Length: 81
Image (cartoon, rainbow, N blue to C red; front, side, top):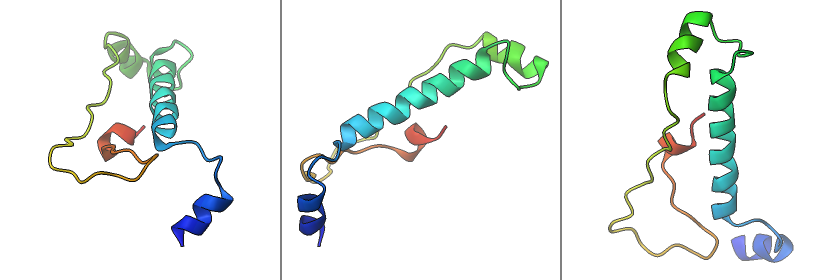
């Protein structure tokens, strides 16, 4: 079943690229929340402006089986915005 789907959608972007897009969007949202134009309350914006962006931690890959080509391991906490 997945072989058929892959054959029909051979130009799909690999999971690693999708993860890059998700992480870039997450950082962009964080930066927007830090800006003066943010809809966040002023007090929260001031506090947020003193923080530095922290990249989400990657998942623990120890002991995981080999994944199919174009798959990637990601943690849910790293994908949340």
